[in-house]
Length: 90
Length: 405
Image (cartoon, rainbow over the protein chains, first blue to last red):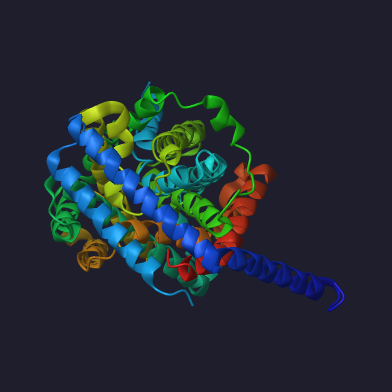
């Protein structure tokens, strides 16, 4: 509260806490290793999605038309993710 | 007997009308990414909407004012315009999300891309409002919306660990991805506390000529209806946690979501998921389109009413017509409906202080409520949840956008 008295001080303190929170969260969010981990996670997620869809299709739990869409979506997303991981990190 | 019937109808509306694009998308994404950890956000959102719906109904029953009408009278047109813009923008985004939800349900069963369905869905929503008695449509949509109980059946079949659900009713800090965690938390709160729910409810109460005898009915509908609805949203999150989180699947697209019910319930699970998404979103689209028209009409003193013929309330009808077709156009551009939905919910959370604080002021004004004003617990709970959700949204939305999600 050193920067101001009373309400001004409280406002400054709140603004500082908020910007501190943004900085902490941003640091966790944007590092190259974090981005690489996220890409891996996305790839794994879509591989398992495709696996589960195929399994359910074979059990007759989902219709053909739906399974086709989901497998296409999985291929698209895997392709996107692989392209991203091939890009050199800045 | 008639009051018991009204409570029963209110409960059906609460249960059948609670799940829509926002609550399904946010609960599924949260369950897939964080398991049961975000159950508390649904609980918090449900408490908040329970209080708000009860307040909106009480205001209508005691003062005979709808919310916009009372706001314009109490705060003047300048301040009311700010609230109007905030609620219309948020509701429009949510309307587009709901039309996207119906279009996606149709895509899932036909394989035809959702954007081609968007104009047809918009026309269907508009036609029902233009040509039919809305009371019938609303009750029909809510009754059909009971199909969403399938999520509860799915949760039972998946043997969801109840102790984990209960343990996560208390908020906890994220183990990883804090930005995503908080973004999901505010999106869930935004989905639960959509202003259209309580604005629409107050208009319905005025149209049904509620008076102080209805305060008990109002409390029962708000408390029980919203609790059951919140319970359903928790069931959605639990199914997603059991099917997706346990396998490491994260939800990036709507196409993945039906798997959560197809896995435990087979082909019927798939069919009932698509029906839940389609019916839930269609019912919400009807309510949202009407709510935007109500807001404008009640705020500016135009003639309004859900059962009036279009020529009897021309500006009211023109408003919902324009909104529905613009929202359909947004989806027709091919914008990702899942991202639009989750983003709209976060924006809703951001706007909460603007949409909620004026209601709190009204609810504490003896001129409107007499002796039926708010208890301090209701004031404190709603104010706390709204302000915290807004602050977290202020931090989480830019971070999530910067992360490209």
